[in-house]
Image (cartoon, rainbow, N blue to C red; front, side, top):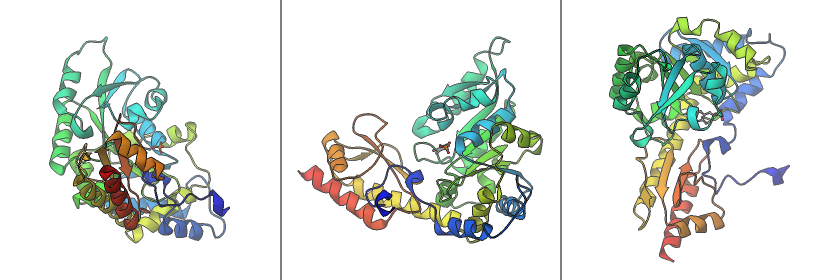
Length: 350
Ligand SMILES: *Cc1c(COP(=O)(O)O)cnc(C)c1O
């Protein structure tokens, strides 16, 4: 089977290219010793929920689902009725990478898009979207969805989140946070998770486990208890109720108990920062967005991008000619960061 493994070197394509971190793996192993009740009625799931309540320092409702698309779309469906609308950034994963799942699981709730610099929603654009029509012919805005850290590797500050929360309350919008890289945001901002969530008015957080080092699984965390009503039925109907739930839950216990969730994220963030700093000084290479989490967005001369690929480096370039996205994970090695920088420098000098 060895030959099936790609070398971890050369890999900046995505943080979900990484494997399972040791702490998550050990938790799976521990949970795999004998029988346990199914469908979440087991001690592992109870403990994982408890750990998440401790982390957020509040009595929240927690559900584990298989992936981020399910977490986001089911959470958003719980916030809206079919005649409502969800406002989000035009580059949000909800809009661009979930194949219409939010509309599907909410039975047609319309997603309305707003622009905003560096992947963050511009509140004046949100306000315009709400106010431009208030008649019965327009899908009534009911949810605002934001991503932390964003799809462009940037962050909302605590103050920005508070402003968004205040805004949402003022307009009667429920606030959803796509936190597929929430850990990276916490590690980078160095604040308590509650400051980025319920204290800022977030009603529901989709907390990513997969990109943080688990095999699979995201936690849907409702800070607003009322909105969690019958969410278990929603999960079941959508095929998201794991019968061997302990294997979705156990990694959370291991990773929260020994801090691996934060340590993994901090490592990924540091690698991204090293990349950004090393690449920035190279002529013809510019950062397209501030590097605030575990992603580096670059503009490269197209020949350099091609040259890097020819050397075997993997990265995404979906952002147009010469655009490159480098993602770091818990598994990124500092020596690979150095090697990428020196390969880039060499190609520029050619
Ligand atoms: C990866 C990702 C998700 C989750 O995607 P799935 O492939 O459905 O697990 C959600 N939001 C963002 C911003 C992501 O990058």
